[in-house]
Image (cartoon, rainbow, N blue to C red; front, side, top):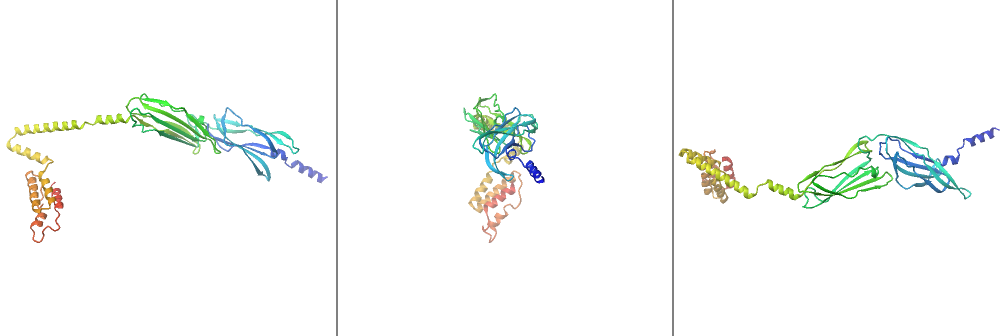
Length: 390
């Protein structure tokens, strides 16, 4: 009697193979997503029967968008010591609104092969899963991604276009873990001085096991109405970085815009022609000379001498300095001594400062016994003399 009761208890406690093995569930990671953020969902089924046919449809909902990221993965796997047939389907789900959203239930419709060679229908159902979704942390349209990049390509230098040239601007916006319709609409490029044509927009998505890779391409053909330069302002794209959990801003940069010929013409207009500059200099010089002539005409002889001496002091032209340089180049010490004396005499006549003994080194080279010209550098002497007197 005891043995029978024990056997009955074992049978009652033993797990039902069919009930345990045929299972389907939704696997959702622990997270608090914001509106528009990708929620990775895995549908996992574990089966013991041989499956002849199967149908599994992920349910649509007004609460979310979704896409399948890869082909269904069917494989054999040992679970709790038993070999089972396992199905995994990877889904990317994107909530449309804040609050709780419910995923499922899902039903896997199977046709299994029996041990007698027949076929039987079998439905396996998941339990629903509820996920709490937070509001998007900005007033802008929800755009959440793990990475976002802006690439701006220009067919020419926008600020130096040839006359009549059209600039082609192509902006490529690439984002990971989002869908094409969640990327922003094409920016409006409109200025009073600009002619703008827009090419058809391109939106593409590439599913990967990690998440969708989405790209949108905008292209404009731009040409100034006039030659006057302008600036196309920047365009900011706010987005939520799911990696750092912070709001960020991507930017389509501002660009200067205009024809190179307009800038060149404006530069030439701002600068006087050489002929006009020469004429202005001639008029100024003539006026200066006329003023000096009037001043000298009414001055006393002593006053005239003072005025002429002052003009010579201010004049950049010094004939004695040029003669000094020529004498140093010939290395003729006697000629150099004569040129130095004329240079110093002019400075004395004009009451310019003079240092005593300026020609001492040259005099030793010429007259000192045994000294001669060895070690004497005429050019160095000239530079020292001029430097000491200026």
